[in-house]
Each structure stands twice: as C-alpha cells, then as structure tokens.
Length: 207
Image 1 (cartoon, rainbow, N blue to C red):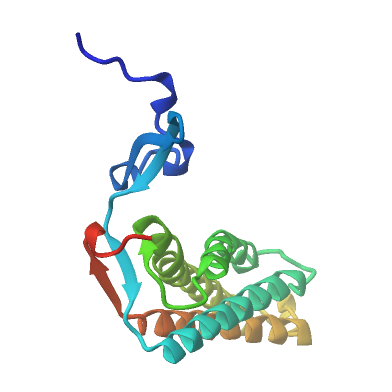
Image 2 (cartoon, rainbow, N blue to C red):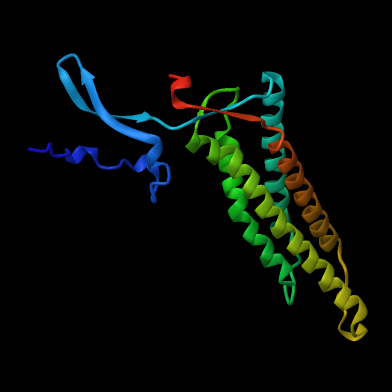
C-alpha cells in the first residue's frame, strides 16, 4: 500500500506565488530525540558565491547602495518639485513609473550580503540580478522622461510666442534631477557588472 503524503508537506509559501524556486528545495522529516517532529526545508539547488576579493566586494556593495539611494532621492525630489502647471507635460507623470523599478532596486540593495558568502539562487537573483534589471528599467524611464522634457520645450520654443511658457528655475532643477537619476542608474549598472560570481553544486557547501 502506497504511503500517503501528509498534509503538512504542502509546498511552503517560501517558494513564492508561482513556486519559481520549488525545485531548489526539498521537504524532509525533522528528526528529534523521540523520532520525527514535523518537516523542515532543505536547500538542494546550486550555491552562488561572489569571487571578488573581500575588500573589493564590500566597496561594490557600498556603492550599489549609495547610487541606489541617489537615484531614489533624485526621482523623488523631481516628482515633488515638478512644475505646478502640468498641461501637456506628460513627461512628469511618466517619471512616476520609475517608482516601481526603484522600489524593487531598493529591496535588492537592502538584501545584499554584507560580506562574501554562499547564497541560495533565490537570494542571488533577488539581490544582484534584481538590482541590475531594475536599474536598467528605471534608466529607460528616466531617459524617456528627459526626452519628453526636451521635446516639450523645443515645441514651445519654436511655436507660437503668444502661447509660450516661461522657463523657470523649477524646470531647470527638474531637468537636473532627471540627469542625476540617470547617472546614478548608469553607475549602479556599472558596479553591479563588477560582481564576479562562482556557481557551485549543492554538495560543495553545507551550511
């Protein structure tokens, strides 16, 4: 007679809504002094470990966090200091889209290991990979917003003088913040590419 799987061995929520990392884990009985006591989760996937020297790795992590903070502050201040008149300035609301990749980038930066260590695939992808992808996405949004800003002012500069809009200090600050945010994401992508990663079989490391 085949053994029935206990209800407690249902896939735990740690794998995420779509169970993307299910194959990296195995549920096994947890043995205690008096026999089995529930279940525990074992990681059976590959291990990821940065191969950069310790000092270089710490410096890269520090700069990733600094440039992430700069990008978030620049984008946030840009939306806060946007011109009061938003008529046809669609590039300002466009900037708000960057909040989504920036939020993911911030989470990845906070979760970065402080020192060189072995990481499960889930943590590696939700830190280094997430930061790099989020930085690229946010950079595209910043570039589109900056392009919209340029087109907007060129149209008004070359258009009917009777309907022209005065260029204010706030407009200049907004444009400067867009440039700063773009530079920050370029630097974030640059430093994230400096991370060299070795991949090991599960048997190579036992925590």
